[in-house]
Amino acid sequence: MNGVWALTRLEILRVFRNRRVLFFSVLYPTLLFVVIGGSAKGEIGGIPVRNYYMVAMALFGALGAALMNNAQKIAQERSDGWIKQLKLTTLPGNGYVVAKISSAAMVTLPAIVVVFVVGAVMGVHLQAAVWLEATVIIWITSFAFTALGIAIGYALPQDSVQLVAMITYFVMAILGGLWFTLGSGALADIGKVLPSYAARDYVMNRVTGLDGNSTDLVVIALWVVATVVFAGYVYQRDAKIDE
Image (spheres, rainbow, N blue to C red):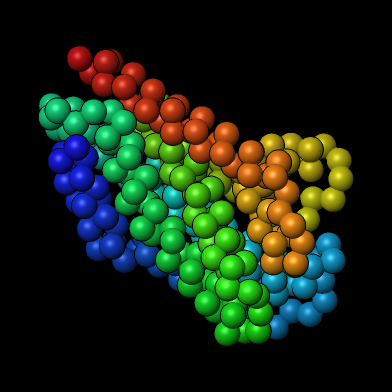
């Protein structure tokens, strides 16, 4: 347990020392929200444009921070030999996954909060309980993308990791309805089984004063559990290959 905590602290320090990561994880989605939703009028799917893109960009930033940063970081760590050094220690495979998810959570949370704070300043008025619920749902959803990033970082050749992670990120964003509503049809049907869609749909309902869809929570929970288990499996498999 001490080893897991020590690695978690190290990972958190590394993240907050990386200005590039902080910019693209926290400031970039905030700037996108200001540019896209700042002065826009009208509605998207019956939702005020500002509210829609506030939720979408908070989710876009959090998921990007979770998926892209971890996939690329692990590819680099494999190249540098850092992973092999960790495997010589008594650190369990699940401890490594826990440390990665914990450090990513420290970045994704500010990514969400900053966008929401800017949204509030720009005139989005919600009850405190709704702000909190929206933050928690997006934050928990990001755990699935952190674990997915870990799995991609280990499962693929190092020169393919960035491309696959980027494709996964944008497919999840588009099919999750983070840029535009999907309406009905095949794309919408696919989107409904993705965590990005489920989180956006649930939070958007709460932001507009509706009850959240419990099915969305089930989808999010299943993705978090499945991806964490899969990430742990991929890490352990990689460790056995190196033995």
